[in-house]
Length: 433
Image 1 (tube, rainbow, N blue to C red):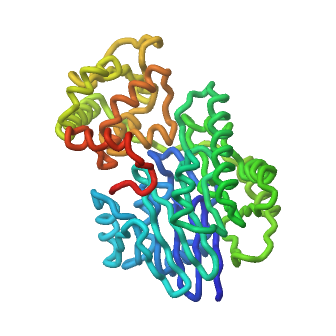
Image 2 (cartoon, one colour; image 1 turned 180 degrees about the vertical axis):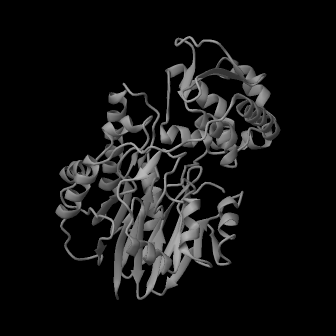
Image 3 (cartoon, rainbow, N blue to C red; image 1 turned 180 degrees about the horizontal axis):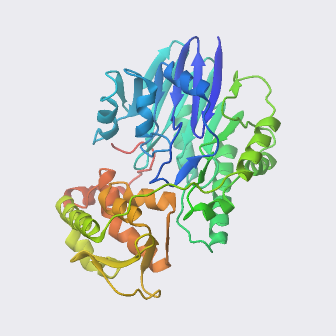
């Protein structure tokens, strides 16, 4: 057996066994989440070539730091792609534009690369999934962004995986929902992520842990402050190692190769990351400015789509009307706007900071109304500020768009089964897709 793992970047690694190779979640270049994040380290040309030469590429979910559409064309034609089964076939149909070799995997279906190399994919929550890889005599659990919250979920995962040799999981926050002065909120989020990861590790007891899916940074002038409390890899490993002294924690730098068994020193890679963390700075990107007429148009289209896809919207609107309006301060074109579901966007002279408001650039507002993942991109990318009431209103207004993008609709035939599920043994692991 000749197995190895090559770390490419962020959440991407390549597993190879007897000349068969599997790439996981390649985001290799470019800004993501409406130009909000960038990679901490540039991907090596050799790693990009390794991806081009690989047999299969698996994507865990649709977020662009795992599935980045502009990167797909770099991987060559007719690449073998793997993705979980979904109702909308959105990712599947996109990949079919580049390859005739796209596999939609049912939950827990075994995909075989060779006799000693298989992958199973299990859906998680609304969009995500995790995978279980058997390579030689090793079992790898790649949780990527799956936010495990309970012992019940861990027991269920273990039923699928059995004993785990190598665990791969996220170690820092991937959300920008806090204002500039909310440093303590970000510290609390960071601490909670490590505490949850520690609980997962302590329960599953893998032999090795590879913390990953966090080697990026908030890269714009309007969100750069969010880096102040992000978990760094050296601190994260020290924290987890102290609580799990019998487990080996591995830190890999882009381009590093490991044979899945030999001793590995983290010193070199950690020192490189320390230098990279110290050298990050905001990136200046010329963003498109959208005028009021265009913004009004997309806000009306947003309202029409919300009503069209959710026949219970008026019911929710009646009980949540106080949350269904919000003020927007546009930082790049110096406009004050208000939105509600009756009028769409309209201009106002002044905004009272005691009312619900959100401050952002016009390109972020445009995407918020026009894209199915506009709300996710805003909350994850963090290119905005809002007061507490404003955050509540954003959550209520854009919940319909966000859930619709995840194939959940506020229609009677959809809501009743979801409500009944709350009283069943339903968990977020392996939901119906």
